[in-house]
Image (cartoon, rainbow, N blue to C red; front, side, top):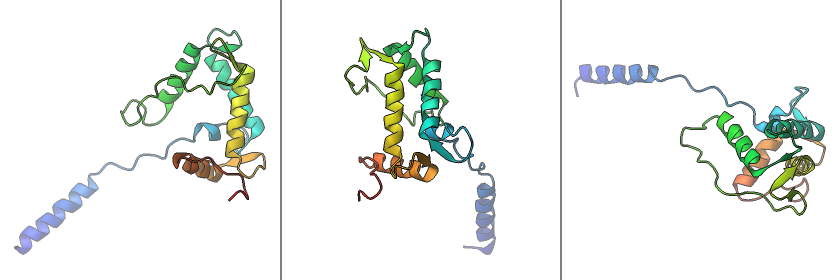
Length: 159
């Protein structure tokens, strides 16, 4: 190959690399980390429950103190729509009822605020693997990795 052709190819390769768009900004904090009210980088159980109370209030469209199946679907759709990647076909919507059938938690398909709060507490307890009452970003990442791998986060010392 001629030297001119090599130089031209190298120049074109560099030009097209320079034309690439900048890397996207980092994603916003996950929902649980958004509960970090005091900004210390840790989510306490109280902060997680306060976030659950706020979510319940936002989802309870008719303000009757319970969430109907339709209110839960609408609330979950709104949360999914606010996540990065929503609407781009990368994350298909979930189908069907994912309720865990807690006895007494949902009467007639409705979920009470107490049941909603209880689930938030259970979710926090699963993430708080060292049982210190706090969850940080590293703990969230470890829990996410364990759940994606088909397992549950294990409490500290339960190896």
